[in-house]
Image 1: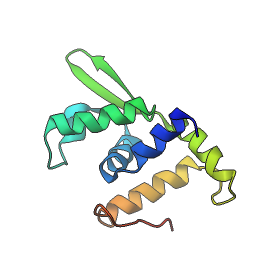
Image 2: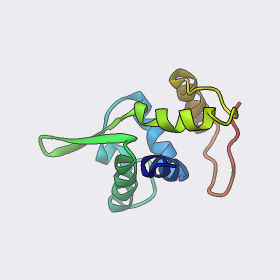
Image 3: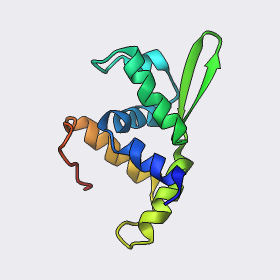
Image 4: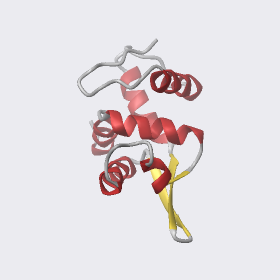
Amino acid sequence: MTDTLSAVFAALADPTRRRILAMLLEDDMAVTDVAEPFEMSLAAVSKHLAILAAAGLISQEKRGRVKWCKLEPDALREASVWMVGFGLVEPVNLDAFERFLAEELGAGHATEGESVTRP
C-alpha cells in the first residue's frame, strides 16, 4: 500500500472526517461553516481538516481572510482501484457515493465503533 493510500484510508476511518466530506459534497465551505455543526473546538475541526488535506481528500485556500475547503473526489480513485482489485466492491460511482453519504447523514450519525453498511 502506498503512503498516499494509507493516508486516505486513515482519513476515512474517522466518522467526523467522513461527515466533513459529506458536507463538502454540496459545495465549498469556509472552515468556520464546516466547524459549526460539530460539538468540538475550531482547533479540533482544523486538525481533522489537516488530515483530510494531507490525504488529498480536500484542498484549502485562503480567500481574503477566510480559509475555504473544497472536496477533491479524485483522491478516492486510488483507494477505489485498490478495493476493486480484490473484487469486493465496484468502482466508485461518485453519484452513488453522494447518495450513500446523504442517507448516512439523514438517518442519524453512526457513533464511533458502530459500523455503517452500504445499502
